[in-house]
Every structure is written in structure tokens, then in C-alpha cells.
Amino acid sequence: MSRFDRPQPGTGALLLAALLLLAGCGDEERQVEVAGPDLMGMGADQVMVGLTHNMTREGVLQGELRADTAYIFSDNSTVHLRSVDVTFYDDRGLPDSRLTADSGQYNLQTGDMEAHGDVVVRDTAEEQRLETPRLLYEALTNDLRTDTTFVWRRGQEVVRGNGLLTDPSFNDVRIEQPAGTRPSTPAPGAGAPPAPDSAAAPTDTTPAADTAAGDTVPAADTSSAAPGGG
Image 1 (cartoon, rainbow, N blue to C red):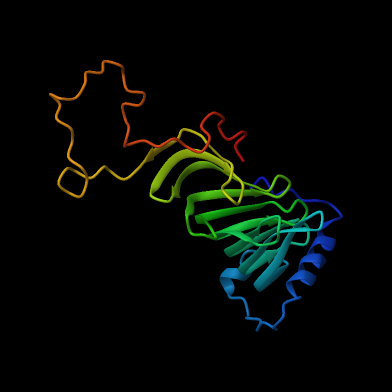
Image 2 (cartoon, rainbow, N blue to C red):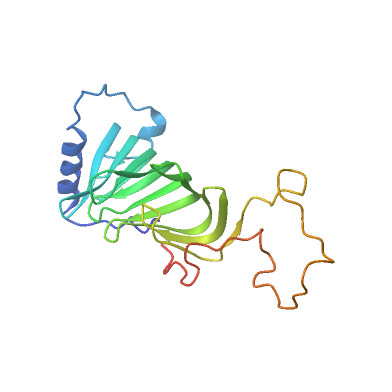
């Protein structure tokens, strides 16, 4: 059971009505498709095709959630989603980053969302990219969190680890068990200056600060691991 699957007595009908109202406020009418046996087999009270929902916190737009299909249960505040696509916005209301995933769960009461399966987050400049099988969005803190393996690409640098916490802008990234790589230094004769003559080089017995220089890059913040675990 997901951490969001917590039935809220007395709130299901109200939350369901709110979602249906928001989903029906598109600029253009969508053609409603008839759900097949596999969709109806979930036992949902409502199956919606083509969902769009504004994710807000205290009246501030934090993101726009889109999904190909949504399964709604009237006795639960959780909406199950397929083919998730979320655009996050910054404080100025401009697109900040985009999340895509195979499936997800959205909590109407808290605004939290959990994405599963081929989760990818890209910033709008296409300079950073996060890949992980599972990611949690926490609306209260506006954070993205994963407690499993991930790959974070930042320019030509690649960082891997087992747990990450970041804001949607990738301005504050905290990583557990980081390990990274950077492109190898070109060999002499391949466009790089030749290595200095070892006989003429001064002797230096001071140990190198990082014996893996050129193979490892530090994470954005390795001093504090991602708290909690989603």
C-alpha cells in the first residue's frame, strides 16, 4: 500500500467533486473514450481519460499535472494515474522543470504525488536530468525525493547514488551514497597538450587530495544525506 493510500472518512465525495470540476475546465472539449475491461477491472468509481489538474499550495501554482487516464475512488483521496506528465513552476510562475513517468498516485488532500516507472525530470534549459524508478513530490516543502537508485546528469557530469532530495529547479541537491564520473582527459596527441617531462618536473611528495581525480565528481551537497526515506 502506498503511503498515500489513507482513506479519509467524509472527505472522499468532496474531493472527488473538486477533481471532476477541475478536470472539466479545459479550454477544449475532450472526446471521452469508453474504458476497456482492463481499466474497469480496477474497480474505480470513476475513470477519466485526459486529466489536467493545477497543483497549488495556498493559492500559488506549483505545477500542472496531466495524465492519460485517472482512476478515482470516492472513499479515498488518492487518484491513480497512468502516463504522468507534470510541469513545475518557479516563484515567478514560469516553467521550471518537467517530470514524466509511466504511472503515479496523486493525493487530493495533501497535494503530494508519487511517480513510478521510468521517472525522468528535466530542467527547462535541458542542462540537468534526473532518472529514477520512483520519485515522491512533497507539496508542503515543494521537494522531489527518491529513496532508491538514480542517475543525475549535469552537463557532461554524471552522478549516481541511492537516495536524493532536490527542489524542482535542482538548486539544492542532497545525495546519499554518491558516485560520479566526468569525461576522461584526452590522451596526448588527441588535441590535449603533451604531458610534462617527468625528469624536469619538480618532486612533490604531498599526497593528492583525491586519488580518483578525473573519475569522480562531488555531489552538489554530500555533507547531508537526504533525510527520511519517502
